[in-house]
Amino acid sequence: MNAFSKNSTITRSFSGFFYEKNEFKTLDLTLNRIISAVADTGFNEDSLGFAIHIAGTNGKGSTAHYLAQMFEMSGFNVGLYTSPHITDITERIRFNSQNIPADTFEKFFNESKNLIHTYSLTFFEALTLIAFRYFAKQKPDFTVIETGLGGTYDATNIISKKLPVITTIAKDHSAYLGENIYEIINEKLGICRDNREIFIGANKPFVYEYIENVLKGKTIHKVKPIFDSYNANNLNLASTVFTHLTGKTPPACETLTAPPCRMEKIGKFTLDGGHNVSAILSLTKSPEKYDAIIFSCTKDRNPETMLKLLKKKTDTIFLTEIPDNDRSIKITEIDINGISKLKEPRKLIKELIKDTGTRNVLITGSLYFCAYCRTILEDMF
Image 1 (tube, rainbow, N blue to C red):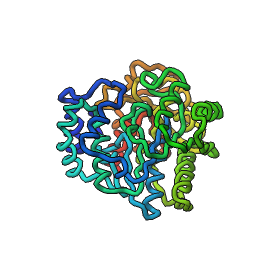
Image 2 (image 1 turned 120 degrees about the vertical axis):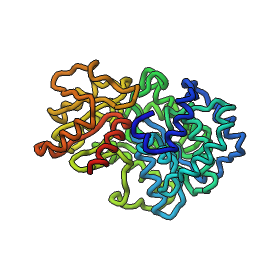
Image 3 (image 1 turned 180 degrees about the horizontal axis):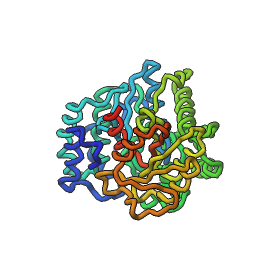
Image 4 (image 1 turned 90 degrees about the horizontal axis):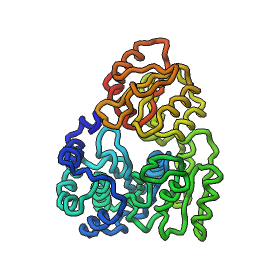
């Protein structure tokens, strides 16, 4: 369990159910478990209102948050299901900008335990079951749903009546999604079932061309990149989808907020998760200037390549670890010239706060890492 989750009793309770009792299932790519569990509850997907289903390698969380805000600001009731969470697991399930109440989450969790045991549901499958049951009670006009991993066998892909939206696609999670970019594209496109229309966000030309060949006969709306940053392109994609569905002009971008740890400012620090090479490459092209960068990620993320890219952004880079995370990189196993190492991010952040010559610091890498650092900064500012 990650350190930043320890602030929440319900987070510990839910995570402990899977981790401490060895209930966390080795990833087995199938929809059979979640389909059976949801069917047993009598769930009808019409209760979600109009569903927007978002998959992609980068930007799907931000796109989902922006789109949900646009709907709500325009007078619609909207459910939002995203991952991961930053501080509390209830952040993943939101209705009209409010987290599912902790007691409501716990109620649905307790009611679902028999189904979780019966069908050996995974952590994410159980969360999806709770989210769909909660939204069904709220009766939203729109429900915005972010996939957890891939698309084809993601637990959220049991919904058929929806508008699929694909954000930027790049290589990531190769062990599960495929060894080359085309296999990964196919996994993301797995959310496009019998749906007639699909929206595709900022991607390279060969990705658009491949998708058009795979999805022949469907109406594909290509929202091509017009900005240098993922965040701006995510906002553009959300705006385009919103106008298409409502016929309305989207709210001004100044009124919208990005999710936590996406270009989030706390004091002299900017928190911006970049969990793969593609995301870091985009970050290096952004106009923002930094005096220093603090970086950490999980060991499956090609940290050497990401660090070499970050050196184009600043000469001062600190490599650290994600506390209480078994998947964290080990700084002793990485050796790149010009990179400073310090195992404890808390100590590093304290030192940089005192350093008056360092005015603008970027914290990037894994969202788990950014979330951990966020809790430290919130205690200090």
